[in-house]
Length: 318
Length: 280
Image (tube, helix red, strand yellow):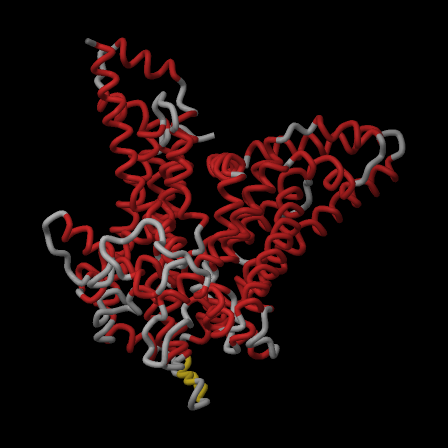
């Protein structure tokens, strides 16, 4: 932010300088500059207001209404939807599934991404090939990737075939509660971990070599160097990727729809999926909007908490 | 002795990397090769790595069961329009927030930043209601407008702004001396220099649109209007069971072009994204 201000302040001065002797022209140049600024940001600003902020306000407004699209009812009911939310017998399960999914996804994704990045950050021939391989699922159509895994995870699919060949027997992954959740998490991590890996790799390559040499002179071992040098130096990237991954984990819908449809039972019904079911399968827009408010609150709180945490553990920031 | 140990460490590392690569690579490989197998061979175990008798029969059936060419075209043109639209909107706004000083620019920037916190999943109910009121349900308009102006484009604006901030102001000085206006400075000087950032924004807005699933499922009901992700899930037999060979052929067709572009241009692809990532 501060750098931007300095830059723009400097350019602002430059605009005025050549026109110094004739103040009137200088004034129009400044005015033209301001007009350009507003015109440039107008599409983004108006679009964001119309397609993001207005809908957000409407979500709150709708959440105070009883609104069933099939019946055609639309009636102000105050906090009734929120009372229903508080006593919804399905909600604890949904929030539990959401928490399990998000925590599992974030932890597995970030640790695997960091591990792969460290492995690929060695002086070794062919690391670019491996980087390409680990990254390749990012380029595969999401639903195509998920369909293939649904096949591989069937009772008689490739994963269990492999396990049989190794001498153990695998479960029917997508038909059991615990394994279905694991499957959904792992399939999603494999799809996108390459993205975070690449971000970590770029950050690792930006760590000055002298720091490692200095810590080696101090007699630090590999693990100490990783903890005391690497992690602090790449902490801004860790913060960025964890915010993106946490928010992303709360948006996962396609994979769950294709792999498990929220089942078995409701074991993989995360909040987005529950919202979708209520709004677009049961046509209950009022309660759907209330669940949207809850989703928004969770995204907001998690982002703010992580942003606050940066003071504590992000070491350097420019 | 020492070189021997380091060579063994190297071998172990290669082994580990190969093992780790299996779950990343095998599904794609299996998808492509199985689409060429007859249906009964798809289920064979151990899975055959190469089809014994490659055939394109299932590919033909993709086009019999669904208006797949139309659906393919829908995905392509929607992703293209979203990409171009996002590039235009985000580079203009990013440039203005980085370079131009106008009253309220900090406040307006904050307003736009709020958009980052609001994924379209949160606003899908009112979005449906709005597009319904405008008579745009079962059209492609929501799939174009929501990504071009929603959270993904806010992220793009942020990336573009960071890039333009890092671009030295002096570069524009010559153009300014020649009396170029703001738009000319942006279009003729800043934009050509921002290719890496534009490339990264193009890649992720294309992929975002290409993978979009919730919006098509919510907004579209006519198969001729479907995009690929939704179309792929529709290849089921009369009992609702998936027709695997047909589905895998369709999945392969949906994935292969992007995958080929990625392999050919993987350097720009990966490094472009990584580059803007650390700056964003």
